Length: 170
Image 1 (cartoon, rainbow, N blue to C red):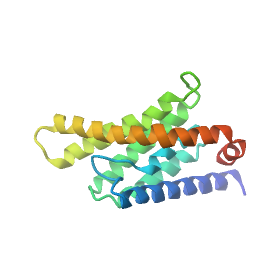
Image 2 (spheres, rainbow, N blue to C red):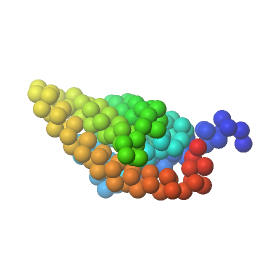
Image 3 (cartoon, rainbow, N blue to C red):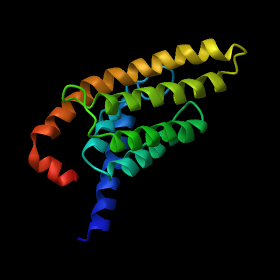
Image 4 (cartoon, rainbow, N blue to C red):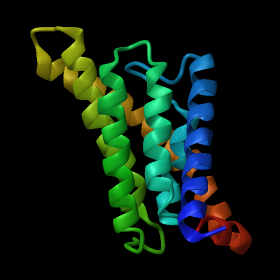
């Protein structure tokens, strides 16, 4: 299999996994809205190991957000947040604080908090945009942080210690 095909296969598998994990979260009422604990967000650490994860996570988010009960706008806004976070995570993957890629873990939290928080405030139609935005930014960011810094850290440590998995991803 040539490198380009392998790249697309990896991206497709990551996208499918992201979609399935988001839909699993949705089954428990955790995937959409102001409070989110998407299991799939643990995968946002994958750009540390694989360039194919950038399009994979983005397309997976697009597909998963098609099922959003919030609005079709979520497909665009949430997916852009995922894309920007994945690009920065990949770009700064070697920047570490005491051996830990802290900034790479913060990008998904910050982008989702800001983008999705603004989206929810916008669609709520409230006149007081800023208070609604800040509240949703806080709740979305908190849910994202919990998943990324718990499940994402476990995934990161597992991949960091497993040469074979890293080899498959790269």
